[in-house]
Structures are given as C-alpha cells and as structure tokens.
Length: 497
Image (cartoon, rainbow, N blue to C red; front, side, top):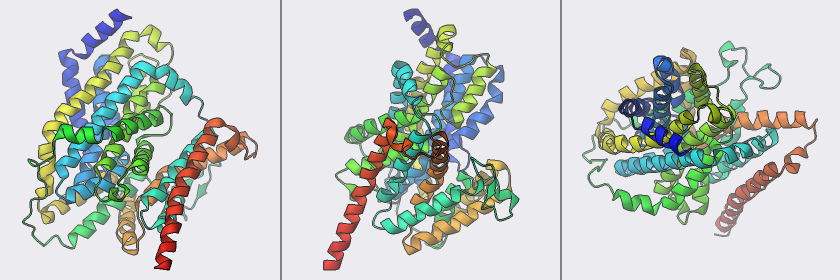
C-alpha cells in the first residue's frame, strides 16, 4: 500500500500532469464565470479532448475543470450579481452587496479561500473515509430525499428577511414553475399550455440568469448615464487574508462538512449544499442582520458548501460506480472510455489510479489557490469599468449563455420573462431567492414524495418510520418554527406600538 501511495504521488507531480491541471483550472474559471457556461458543460466539452490522453492526464484535466468551474461561478456572482453556475446562487446575496460597498477584492478572496479549504476538506474525506460515507449514502431512499428537500425548502423562511409571507409565496411560485413539463412519474405533459417547447420544462440556467442578471441590468441601465468618480474596488486596501480567513474559519469548516455530506449523496448537488450551508451560518451567527446585506460569513458558508461537494461526489462514483451529480456522470463516461469501470473492484484492480485521482483532487485545489490569488487583482477591477460600457457586454453574455444551454431561442425568451419577474417582484417586496430555491428543490421534493408513496403503497408513515427521514423532518420543523416565532413576535410589537 505504501508503495502504491508513493507511486501515485509521483504521478500527480509529473510535469505533464501539473500543466494539464493548470490549464483545466484556468478553463474552469472561464466556464464558471461566464453566465450559462457551467462546470458540467465545461467537463462535457473537454471529454472528447481527453480521448487520446492517458487515464491520469484525462482525470486531472477533468478535475481541474470541475473545481475551477465550481469556484468560477462566484466571480460573476460577486462582481455583477450573476451566478456563473447554479451552485453560486447563494453567493449573490452577500457577494454583490460587498462589491457595491467597495469590498470586491475582500469578497473574492474570501470566496477563493473558502472554496479551496472546502475542496481540500472533501478531498481528504474522499481519501480517508470514502467507504463509510458511501455506505451511509446508500441508506437514502425516496423518503429520505423528500425529507432532505423539505429541510432545504424551510430555508425560504430564513432568506426571506422581513417579508416572510411574500417569501413563502415566491417559494411556492418557484415550485409551481418546476412542475411545468413532463410529469416525472406519469410521463404526461402538464402546464405546457399547448407549447411544445415547454414540454421540456423551464431550464434552471435561463431562469437563474433572468432573475439575477437581467433584472440587475435593467436596474443599472436606469442610472448608467450617471458617472461615478469613486473607485469601487479597493484591491490594495483589501483586508489581511490570514486574519479574514481565521475569523471565519469556524463557518468554513462547518460548511465544508455540510457540503461533503450533501455531495456524498447521489442526486443532490452543490446548489443544495450551498443554500443549506448559508442557512446554517445565518442560524448560528451573532450578526444575523448582516446576512443579505454584505456578510463575509455568508460568502464563506455558500462557497465552502458548494465546493465541499466536488470531492464528495467522487465518493459514490469511485466506490460504488454511482455518479454523485451531472459532472461525475460525465466523469463516469471518461473512466469507462479509458477502460476503467468504477466500483468496489476498481480499488483492487487499479488502486494506483484511484489514489492518483484522490491526491490529484487536492493538488487541483492548491493550483486553484495559486491561480486565483493572482487573478483576483484583475477580476476586482471589473467593478471599475463604467456601467454604460459594461452593461451591453453583460447583456450579450446573458443571451449567449441562455442560448447555449439547449441551442434554442426559446431559452433566451425564458430568460427575459424571468428577468421581468426579477425586476418587478422586489419592487413590491417579493424576494426572488425563495423562488429560485423552489425551482431547484421542487423537482426533488415532488419526485421523491411520489416515489415514496408508491413504494409504501400510499402509507404516509414511511416518512416518519425511516430514521433518517424522521431526523430531517424534525430539523425542518425546528428550522421553520424559529423564523415564524420571530415573525409573530415582531408583528405583535408593531401592533402595540
């Protein structure tokens, strides 16, 4: 075993592997930062390029793209209020507020450090406790997935701020949007209103770009002609990196653990992990009022949560042959293309390759830290570009990103519709983030709920007789009760006043 580990470390630090990792991470930054070009798309496009490579080189390139793309989404989320990927949707809530306060460099650095720490954390989990986590992940059935989705939906109460009632309405509206298209159980079309293009449902990427990017472009365009003499991004005046990191270390560690746990469960994904981590950070924070208005803890939690997923999704892939999310599904194809069949026997037949992948994941995150550290100074200066010059370019990128999802103009139209919703709804006090949460978690909740009832033949007790499901439902009850109690107490105080 010792000889295998030494040989694997030697393979990882070979010059050609380091070069491939560097290029993969760099490409991941670009795909993650550009709206609509997700990490999944980047890995899928890179797959044919790796066909002629050795298995080690191929996996290093794909891992670099995966981790770089997951972090890259936070760049545009912080700078232009546009999540480059769905995984960075939670980062928008505090990242853009900090950038508007002239702390773009601080926010980008916190995002980078939290992402790298979480990536290494999940890589170590993959290396040390992969079999145990994969066995626990197998315990998740439809009832457990439904309870997890319900727990995620309770976050609507905490991210709605003072507009709890309106936040719940937007969350329900988001869940309704997620039901448009083909019934996942019955296979029938619903709510398509005779439109063939709606049969496939509303894609998350155009909706995401519309809710955040297009709405912000409309808002900014109203004052684009006003010149500001203030330098918004104070790169040289950024806070001490080490001090800022240590200040938020507790949140980063906790969120990394949440991301690793969620990532090890097949079919979840970084968006859920990001929102769950953000919610937990807000719940345990002594400064809850800062969340949504520019909290470093919020960025640290969101980015540690979504990047903690990267290594964890490889756990079910390598140990069981089950892809943890869409990206690892593409990686499954890459491994099989190289003649490697993921599963329990892979550790016996190709142990050196498995350890190379595990050590390679850690090295990818170190490379991401080095590249990101030097790139932040450049990224932060984007906030200094005059708004009237920046907006046309952003609008073009939004259209390209939406079109690229399915290569249809219809997705661009969907983007514009959600852009209007994202622009109009907040003016009446309706927050848009709960709607996004409903769109993300709605399909998981509905499909798992109906599958669980099918398995139990209509017996609702399946949700409370399964221990994991019961725990998540109890956590959901606690999570939703606290904001409602606060909401009612504030209402009573206002009536007395």
